Every structure is written in structure tokens, then in C-alpha cells.
Length: 342
Ligand SMILES: [Zn+2]
Image (cartoon, rainbow, N blue to C red):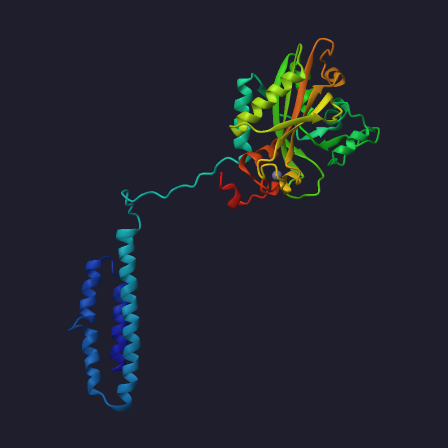
């Protein structure tokens, strides 16, 4: 009896290995497992056995039955997979949506600013982020031993000139583009230069080591502070789409004379004070002024003929105010929960 069951099992498994289509599989199923099938008939004989023999053969039969059924299911799955699922493309099913990226909030506002300045006839320039000490300080009226260099905590690159002075820096402001632009295009000149700048800062909600500025420069005959303030107001009203309260106060920067600071009322707290505005209610947004005659000379522009203004917009800060972002650290965090809101 045992031998008979094992023999049937072997026959079934061999037969299943040669199955090529579903119709043949169904025939085999009927032949062995159907009501009058060989295996079913063999099982019926079990009833004739008794005692120990019945128990022993019974458990073997059960095992064989499981194996056979499993093999039938496997074979069926393989055949169906071949004819129906694999190699068949249902062109009527909706496609998978490809997720698209989007622009960083800094880029979004940069584009808006470029639109505003384009209307006023400004061109857009770029400058190197690894800058020479000469363009970053010297040509901006900040000599090597001038204490004004202490105003900007600088990342110097481990590289010295023949005098033993560090001569390469990660630019601390976008202002080096001023002299580069004058040397390249001469006067008259209108340009903006947005880009990244670097300071060795202790990081908190309003300080970062890497942030964005936007330099602006306008040189022509008879340019005055009035022109500067008019352009600044155009810029701020354009970017916020409403009137923002501003104030102008004197400021010191070695590359302008006179220098001013244009502040805007904090749009996050409305002027009552919050961490973003250092609890003052105002935000320094625009250090600016009339280009220092020495800087014009470094740029090859005659200060007796031309005058000009320059500003260094705190670009990252402007974006914070624009969208009401209370912490500067979000910008470089790469945190999708933040980025996906734009
Ligand atoms: Zn505030």
C-alpha cells in the first residue's frame, strides 16, 4: 500500500514537470485527484486497513496529498503567470505618477527680485564664492590690517601669498562683485549679484555660517542717496506686495561714504519683538550707501565724473520675512517637511 502511494506520487510529480498548458494540467488533476482519480482510489483502500497499519499509512497518505496539492498550485501559478501576468501590459491602467521637485524658497524669491530689477534696467551677475582677499577686502577699501575686517568673521583658506598673508577666503559678502563688475563693464552700470556668502558664526535662529545676499550697484552721473532710497522702496514693496514700514539710519561700512542701514519692521512679530528680530521689532535688511571714491578707483571708474550707490541685501533674511519663517536654520537643513511647503 505504502509503495503504491509513493509510486503514484512519483508519477504525478513527473507528469507535472512536463505540463505545458493549463488544459493539460486540468486533465492531470482529474486523472489523479478527481473522484475516480488514481490517488483518490488508493486512499479509499485505506479504510480496509486496521490498527497500526492504518495509522501509519494514513499519515503518509496525508503528507503525500499535501505535497501533490502544493505542486499542483505551484504549477498552475507558473502557467498563469506566463500566459496572463508576465509579458502582458494593460495599457488602459492609469500610469504611475512621477514626483516632481520644485524650487527652493531662496530661488523663488530670487526670481521675483530679478523681475523687479529687470524692470529697472539692472543686469544679473555672478561672482566666485572662493574669493581673493584682494576683491573681498582690499579693493573694498578694507586694507589688510584694517580693524573693519573684524566685523566679518571669516573662513580663511589655508593658502598664503609670498608675504605670508592669507590670500583666499570664502567670501563674507557679495560686495566683491562690485569691483569685478566695474572692471569688466565700466560706467555707467546697473547690476545685481545674488549668491551665497560665508561667515564663521555661532549658529542660532537668526545666524547661519552659510546664507544668501544680493549685491546691488548703480553707477552713473549724478547718482545720489535719493536714487538709492527710491530703488530700495521699489524693491521692498515689490517683494512684499504691500507697504512695509522702513527706517533709515546711519551705518558704517568701509566701502561706502556715506553709509546707511535700511531696516524693515519685523513681519514675523509685527514689531513687538521676537527671536528673529532679536526682540527689537526691526530687522537690518539693507546695509547700503554711496560707493566710496576709493572703491570706484579700484574699479577703474573716475570718481570725479561718476558716482553710485551700492547695497548688500540680507537676502536670506528677506525670504524669512516674506514667508514668515522664524528660524534661519531651516534653509540649509534639507528637511523635506520644510521644503515641501513651497
Ligand atoms: Zn520680530
